[in-house]
Image (cartoon, rainbow, N blue to C red; front, side):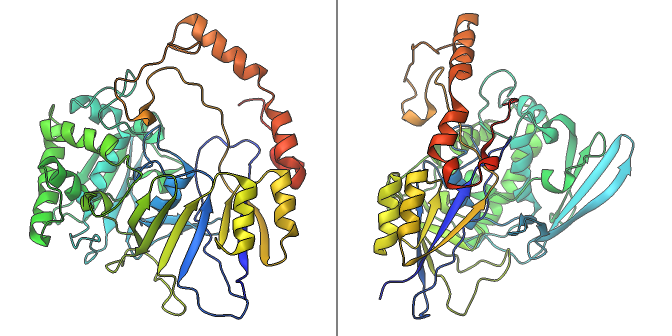
Length: 421
């Protein structure tokens, strides 16, 4: 007897301004109540990178995979309510003066990365590099406001970048205090999250295998040294790290030849393998303690993301039992196809994400060819090119596309496109 499968349909918000992602639903129940240890989730877009933090890799699929592989100070439940993850650590306002607003983050001792390295507040420092344009310029990593910095992060230009003044580690290395120039209304979600900085250090040294626990911890200490050096001026090791962070994680195949340092995580799951444009397999992180406990009764031990871009084909795969969860934005026709299947559980919901049209203006970072060039009609930043791009976007019938392809299946009020977009 085929298992019942769950459809998670992601609706568009009316005026989404940020590309964000919710946690992937892992609900899957068999018809006879048998335990399921593996869940297969369909994503309509294939994974393009293990790093979702650059302008070209900030995709929902990349973020969903990263979500399962990471844990920090907070997360959203299905409310959605902001939930503090006290398993990982705590954070609080420690000073609130007119021109001096400070928040201190403390990482709980005893946690380790998937390779056994200690997790400390030093692992929060990368977040400052990725979010502070002032630090990037001072450390010789490039000015994010005038070109592409070595750490090609999407974190520049926001409230953190505009208001942060400094960061300071505690003497024991488990607390980080972030100082802003004024009170920040979104302070709870602005702070840096953890990243395995020891892995970057080891890759700078040319390592292609996991290090011993002592060597990994020594690499974390080296990162603190390099970070402090960057506060004073250019640092060669940070420059190499920037190139690694921005480029080396952009892989779509993961196998025995993949550098395992690229896979280090502290979430409930870790990437085990991946086949380009086909699938990503994640298994439980046996060293995970950084978040809510994973179920020990009927546990999900393996999560497979299967990439089927064609809506009707994905719907048929759901009906055939080839996938357990359809995670996508089906057209009206595909939605009707799904409704006709009698062996699935059909759920619709909304999430904070949006669809968009990208116009190419220069070298494509996704091409994998740094010498790639583009000289098409939208190329460059001349006034003519900018006017042409604007004219094209103004002429694009966005509302008509939404009405025809998507909105008929749901409440049309969810799909009104803001005139401000």
